[in-house]
Structure formats: structure tokens, C-alpha cells
Image 1 (spheres, rainbow, N blue to C red):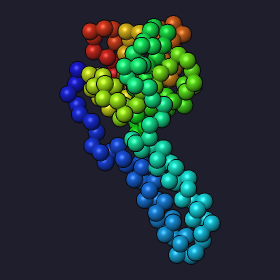
Image 2 (tube, one colour; image 1 turned 180 degrees about the vertical axis):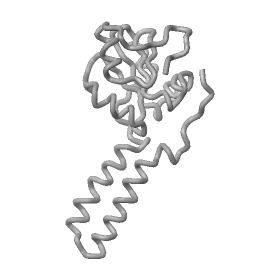
Image 3 (cartoon, one colour; image 1 turned 90 degrees about the vertical axis):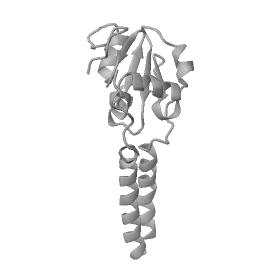
Length: 164
């Protein structure tokens, strides 16, 4: 168990701020030249992407206590964050509508946050809980292997520290 804390707020918001700064610069240039349509074409997707990567986006979310009711060896409970690159990658690899997965947003659930802190916190995201197995920095391949009973994913047994 680690005592690592959450990353600084600037790290969580860095990609969002980058999108907003680029959008503001592009909008200012377009406004200077009175290119209103071009400004709109640039600004709308930039604002969307800034929201998409920000910690305030709820995304796929089930409350931690409700998600635990689905806990089984053939079901994955995945703790994720919209501000985490690996969480975005696992969401691309797994179908969001797959009935074998339940998604819990790290920023919107204090119980999920506490569970993540027991497994090295934000640095361990995404964390997949499959039955009694805990996969830290989980990939879609690892989750699918365990769900399909291939067992090739490295996991932590109950009472054992998760492997990195």
C-alpha cells in the first residue's frame, strides 16, 4: 500500500488548459481578421475536447457501492479518470456497452477514490476489479483475458500487493 497522494491539480487540468489556451489564441487571431466562421469552426471542437479531457466530465459512471453488487469473476469494475491517458486507452479498447463491465469515475465517487488510494492512487488508474483480482494500470487486453478466463493477466491475490 502506498501513501502517494493525488497528482497536483495542474496535472489533472493540464490537457484541458492546453486546449483552452490554443482555442483562445486561435479565436483571438480569427477575431482580429474578422474570420467569424473560421473562429466558430475552431472554437467549438476545441471547447468540446477541453471538456472531454477535464476531470469534471462524468462519462461512464456507476456509484462504487452499486458497482460492487456486480462483482464477480466474469465482471470487471473499472475505476477510471477522464484526466488519465491510460483510462482513455482502456475505454477505447473495451466496448462501453459491454454488460461485463461497470465504470466508476474516480473523481465522482469517494468510495472509489478510497479504493484507488489503497492501490497506489491516481498513478494506478485504471484499476480493474474482477472478482477478487485487482489489476492496476489495467489494459483492455488484460481485462479481456481475465474475463475470457485466459488468465494471462498479472494480478494481485487477496492480501497481496498489486504488481506494477
